[in-house]
Length: 332
Ligand SMILES: [Fe+2]
Ligand SMILES: [Fe+2]
Image: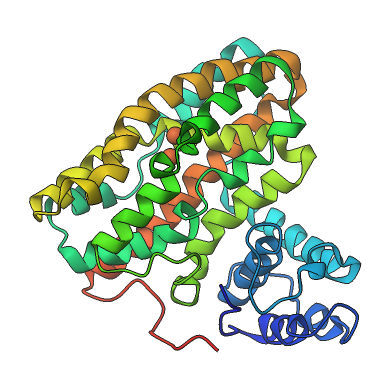
């Protein structure tokens, strides 16, 4: 993956600096461009790029940037704004008795009435809608499970064993062809899309990047480990039914089984994962760290709210007959 085109003064300055080696050009211009707000294309992309240095990185960026103190200072400034943004838009969650965490997660996820995106995909979507949907999702699914893996060394005992059990499935249990990210690549190719990592970063809006950024925020900070577990639990607990609908929609369009398999696999796997995540992972973590139950629920609420905002964006465009992706531009 290469650096995408900038989306404003922060990414203009940041990407310009990242093209050179650490220390060559100061990041002052990117820092100076920071405003108080977070909810826009420029800030989400800047934060996404800072985080990406900890994943596969960029072909045109020196790997030493990952731990450059100036870069980390900029990232921290972006994160403070992102945390304030989340606090403003995500419904507040109170801590509960550790034994009630599972029930509270169930209540949160069952109360979630997102826009009916999965129903649209099941019943009305054409292939172009599916291609658009998969393009948005590629930002996360091509590194599926990676952000939650950051929690493994931060846990011990029962919650660690539970998380590893889930992650082992996500990574295919040692078999490349069963890795969820690989199944997703098959889906992308089957729909005529480029399955290379980050190929569509330049096409996805900030509302899509926010879905990934929140996982990296929680994953890269030990203090947010409770929120990361709650986030994963919310994903698993709201997965089986929508994935069944996506699979049904693709079959309705005559798509071959191998291309649908990513979604079929999640109907099965996540029915099991949701139990492990709520009971063994979050429940056991709450029992060990009762002061973190509010964080667990907050992480779940963040997952649900950012997903809701993303689905509203996509479905809103489709209802108006417009494209939910950014205009086609050639990456710089
Ligand atoms: Fe998965
Ligand atoms: Fe899962």
